[in-house]
Structure formats: C-alpha cells, structure tokens
Amino acid sequence: MENTETKEKKKSGPRKFVWILPLIGLIALSLAVFTVSRRYTRQFLPGTEILGVDCGNRTVEQAVTELKNAAEAAHFVVGDSSGVEIFRSPMSAFLGEDILTAAAEDAFRAQRAAARWYDWMMEGERSYSSEPLADLTDEEIASILTDLRFGENGAVPPQDAYVEITDTGYTVVDAVPGNMFNVYVCARELGKVLRPVSDLTSGVPTVIIAGVDVGPSVTADSEEIQRVTAELDAYLRRRITIEFENGNSYTFTPEDIRAVSYVSVMGRMVVCRPDTALLRSFLDTVIEDYGTDGVFAKFLHANETRPYVYYRVGDRGWIMDRDGLTTDIASALNDRANGTFVPNYDRTWYWKDYYKGYRVGDTFIEISLDNQYMWCYKDGRVLVETPIVTGNLARRDDTRRGCFRIYGKVRDTILRGPTWNDHVEYWMPFDGGIGLHDSSWRDEYGEDIYMADGSHGCINTPLEAMKTIYENYNKGDIVIVY
Image (tube, rainbow, N blue to C red; front, side, top):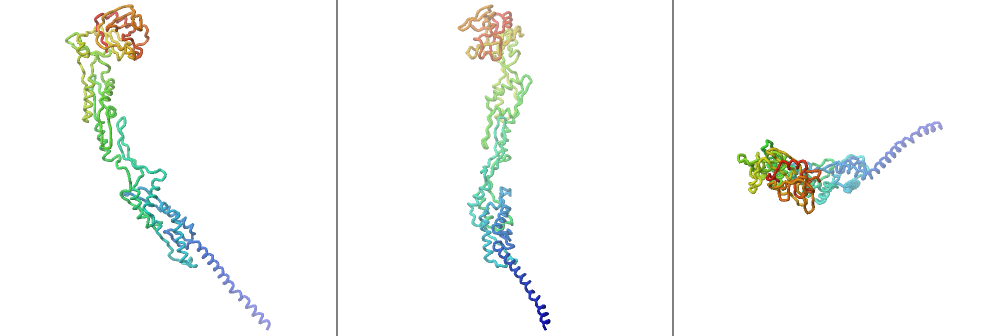
C-alpha cells in the first residue's frame, strides 16, 4: 500500500512545475510589452510621418532634427518669366526651429491622445500633416527674402551698359546685373506656394514670377549702345590723308582724330566735333615730321625773271598754309567725310609790302631767332653757317625781326652801354645799335641760351665765323632776321 502511494506521489511531482514555464514566459512577455509600450510614451510610433518626413521611433527632439534636415534639403527656386533662375534657397529659411518644434509637438500630442498601449504593434496610417507657413504674411516673407538675397554684401543695384570716352577713343563698359529684385511682388507670389506646403519631401517647384528681376535696361549688345558706337565710328574712323609737296603723306588714325576733337556721350546724345586749336597743334607736329619743317623766309629776288626765292633753314623751301589746312580737315570731320588733302603753299611776299624795296639777290645774311642759327649766302651759296646767341628774352632785350642793311664795319673796338663795356674784334651794325659781333666771353652758342643769358639785342657770333663774315660782306648787304 505504501509503495503504491509513494509511486503516485512521485508521478504527480513533475506535473506541479509544468505551468511555471508558461507563466515565466508570460511574465517576461508582459514586461517586454510594458517596456516597449512605456518607451513609446516618449517616442513616436513606428511609421509616423510629420510633414512627409519619417519620424517613427524618434523622440520629439530627434524628430525636430529630422525635420530640420528635410527643410534644409528642400529648396524653392525663384525664376523670371523666361525661366532663368534668379535665386534659390532651402525651405529652412522659412521653417525655423520654433516652427518645426511646434509641428513635432503638435503631432506627438495628437498621437498620444489617440494612442492605445498596444498601438505600437499595429500597422496603420500615422501621418501628421499641417501647413506650418499658413499664417506667414507677405511682409514677413519679404523680410526673409531680403535677408536671403542681400545677406552681408548688401544690395547691389544694376548698372546699365554705357560708352566711356577715353583719350584714344572709346570703350563699351558692360552692364552690371546687380542683385536687386522686386521683393514685394516676389513675396506675394511666393506666399501662394509656401503657405500650402505640408510635405517637405515632395519638393517645391520653381516659382515663375514675371517682372521680379530688376536688372539693367541697357546691355552692351543693345540697340542703344550699337547706335552710339556706330555714330562714334562714323566720326573717328574717317580716312583723312595729307599729301605733302615733298612726296611724304600722313593718314590720321582714329586715335589721332580723337586727340584733336571734342567727343562726348550723354545717354543717347553723341557730340563729336573737331577742336581747331588742338587740330592746328597736331598738324604742326605732323608737318614737322612729314612735311616741310621749320620756318620759311621768302624774299623778292633781284632777277625779275625769277621773282621769288624761298629760303629756309639752310635749304630752299616754302611756307605752308597751315590755317587753311586746319579749316579743310575740320570741315571734313564735321561732315563725316573722308578726304585727301594737299596743302596750299603761301608764295606771297613774306615780309609784306613794307619790305618790297629790299630786293634780295644771292648775297645776304639770314638769321633765325627760333633756331638760334645764322646762314650767310655769298653768290647763292652758303659761305658761313653757325649757331649764335641773340637778345635775352628774360630781360626783354629781344632782337628785332625784319629786313635790314649793314651800315658800318669797325675793327678792334669797344661796345659801351649802360651796363656793359665789351671789347670786340669785329663790329657790323645793321639796326641802330644792334649788329653782328664776336663775343669772346662766350664758350657756347645756339639752343636756348638766349632765353635767360642772351645778348642786349646784338648777334653774338663765334670769332672765326665773325672774321669770315667781316671779310666777305660790305655796307648795304641785306640782313634778314625772322
């Protein structure tokens, strides 16, 4: 009997523990469910989307970070009516952290209010959308756009292309686009797109706004600039050529024409005209290099069959009508005309009617004050040529210009005056107390000595040259000073 009871007890022992394992499992599962459920009291449920962004299994703070990243990645683009992009910006410029935090907190509260402890195990629609910019005013949008567009660099107004006149011609300065735009028009139109935004992942299309871009009205290739440059070219690119009697020629460059002209551009008005003073000065330079340079003296010749002889610096020549040439070229420039010009040469009596009584033969003395040089002709050939020093310009002791005759010859004499008492070997007066003489006190002659250290009006001449002159010229011989 005892054995039977003992066996029954042994058989019932293991059965007592069979239910413990399921109980333990149930308790563990309950704890797990409780733990997970408790976690979702602080996190969004799986599959939660806020403004299109997956925020499941994230705290509010983590959800805000996700929303900020999505706002930074989503861009809106403003373009003009032709589709050209004016500027772009991330949505984060309008969706600040405070707005995104409010959206996340609103979604979390809404989810918690409707959630059951086991909802985390259930699939379902957990999308929370709103229009976080619905209350954004046009003025607020305009303020944000202004900061976006200009930033730290500030507003740069557009600048129209224009034609700049230079010393050598002109140059076209291209337009500056700037960064200005019609902020209020842009804000109004952009607001229509931004206020309904409820999904940051769907992208924001380009906002095409006509008339929003404030750019230059005149560009380098515009008709206005082309018309101005065409008018300038019509003046500056004239072909003006001078053909000189000596066979040389000179053609003006556009830079030359600019240098002798008044040129101005004021908007659409172009003014181009020659400046006769500048043109005459320029022609003097050209004539000196290409034409017959120097000052020419012309005198009646004693032989009536050869009425005029033209003498210049050591050679024969003529006097060019520079004023007439200036007038002709200025007229061509005013008419926008090309032309080849042959200067007229003045072959009239150089010393005017007053000096017609001085019939100059082939023996005379010629003195150029500008060149500080003297040529002495004997029977048509140069006997002596030499640098000289004439009257002191600084003291106003200028040597008088004109035609004169030698009226005396004296050897070894003293020239006396208010402030001088000088011995000379040769003295040949021709204009009152003014004459030719040697000057042993000088070592140098010519160039610009006469301007500050000239004579009292006489022609200071090196001794050897003066000796030859004294021995070959007589009373009555002509001295021409010019």
